[in-house]
Length: 125
Image (cartoon, rainbow, N blue to C red):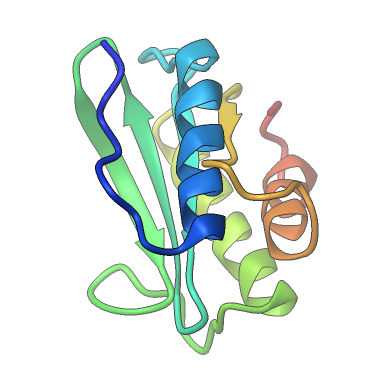
C-alpha cells in the first residue's frame, strides 16, 4: 500500500517524495539480495541495508554516531568511504548482490560515488 506524503511546503521535497514512492514500488530487497538505501543531507550521509521480506534493517552506516566512518563527510570522498564500509559489511555477511534504492535523489554526485564504491569492492548492484 502506498504511504501518504501529507502536505509538504517545499515543492522540490514533495517531488522527491513522489519519485521515492514510485521507485519503492518497483524495488524490493530479500535476505539474499538486500536493498541499499541512501539518505543524504547537507550535514550527513546515511546508508541502510534492508531485508524487506523480513521487514528488518540488516545494518546501517553513516557519517555520524555509533556506526560512523571515521572522518567521512557528506561529499564524494565521504561517500566513497561509506560505500567501502557498506561493501565490507555485506561481504562479512556473505552477501554478494544487492539492489539500490536511490530514494528519489538523482543518480549523480554523492549518490553515484556511493554506489561506485560499493561496486568497486566486489558487490554486484
